Length: 162
Image (cartoon, rainbow, N blue to C red; front, side, top):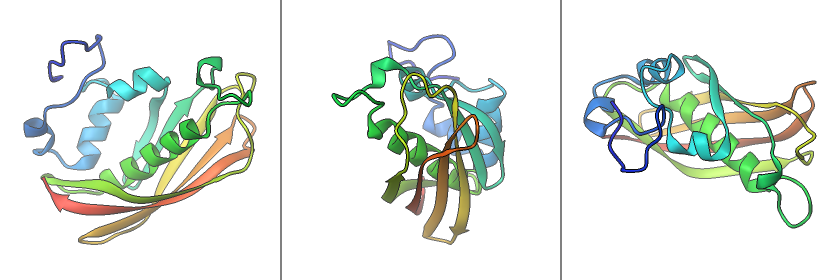
């Protein structure tokens, strides 16, 4: 199932485009969640995991680690931005028909609280706002285990045939 990149670990890889284009987005993401398809390599690198999926909604789990610190002594804001970009794009993907793809055109992130390796598990949730024939928008929230908001954002994605 996974494309051979020469460096893939068991359970990580990329669903070949020829296979991915035959499935609607929700089917693809259910396969990822159930382990029928490999998790993308970025999941391993960042330690994020798909934890919930439904039409128009995706949740990823992540636990902040010291290895992601910036020079100021907290988790780099790019980690929050990546988590939000991922869930906001993936929730749009769950609504797309087979043979249709997307790419992020714009992302806006608001940072509310810093993350450290003492923050504990966090969850990033993306929800669709609108999906049209060419443009889709969604919103995302990153919260800690007690529900405190860490960051939130919105995205605009371009929809196109693949």
